[in-house]
Length: 66
Length: 171
Image (tube, rainbow over all chains, first blue to last red):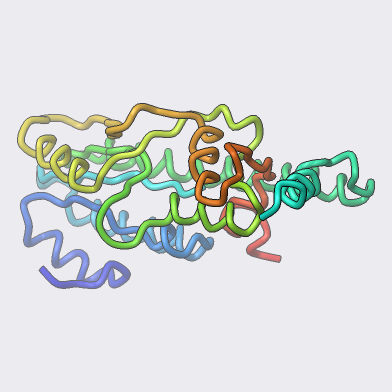
């Protein structure tokens, strides 16, 4: 399912089309800037918004680079 | 690198007593800024995990892996070795007692596959394959390629953290 992690519409469409999401992508892991962290948070909010109430699975790979 | 030159480099990098007062004060300020930036980033990450675990109607799970290694590009070990080459020995933070484990990317994938098929409700997991070792121990291993004889270099958090976490990104 192709899509863009930073494009809410395409991310939502991709999440709605699958049974489970394993989220390993992280902008902040590559570019540890405030914007990178904000992009990660926006993507997660988009995924949670699309999954809420569906009973589908979301596995988040936690990331904190030191 | 000759033993004498290496010892000189090591001493130069670690001896705060040789630093001018202003430099020592700057390092203390930098450490405090790094601490605040790290605390803020940690709080945001923890809130993210809570949101995944607590969203209604979602079977949310959070996996906290150790440092992931395996196929493709890798940051941590090559980065440590590069810093060892640049400084004569690999760095670690503070006393270096923090424990750190690793997990191969294939093992992590298998673990996540098993979670998908076996776990029924929201939960938090940790995933690491290797026995935890102190960051000092990892730094000692990374120092081996540069023949540093297990010596390591004490570095401040500010030196190792990404700019966003050290509080310097917005300046």
